[in-house]
Image (cartoon, rainbow, N blue to C red):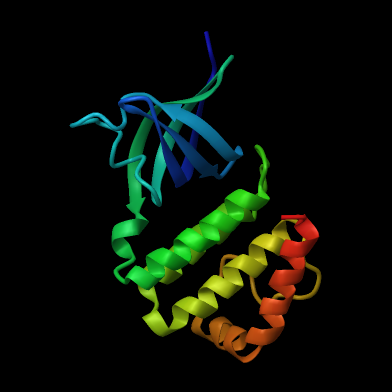
Length: 189
């Protein structure tokens, strides 16, 4: 009998697999980045469809088999995509998720990453649109720092996206973008 892992996770990407299945890339609290197969999730009326939509945060049941991870169950907790009302906020979430997926190769449990991404998504859903660029810059910088690709101080906790912290990001925008570009170059991507 296979062990079931119960965790909370965010769907960062979803790729079709066959007629009704999909591969989902999940950032989980305990297991880190996990790529799992979700059976029947693309079929009409699928129970797990909403829980495994892109940018959905769900309570998950994962099973590790000989062919990799499989989603055995999911309950939707937060639907970040619909909470991000502006197309610009969804685009920012996609860019940061894409950067994250490019930088993290395999299962890498890191206690900073899950709260960072949920804090970023919450900021995009609640803050005014003029704060989204600063939130995106901060999220990219914090991800690179958590992965050890950027040196230097970043004010506040990684998961904090307060107006005061984002005002600091706006003031130091050029410096932060330079640090992000150096971190991406250091990653070899």
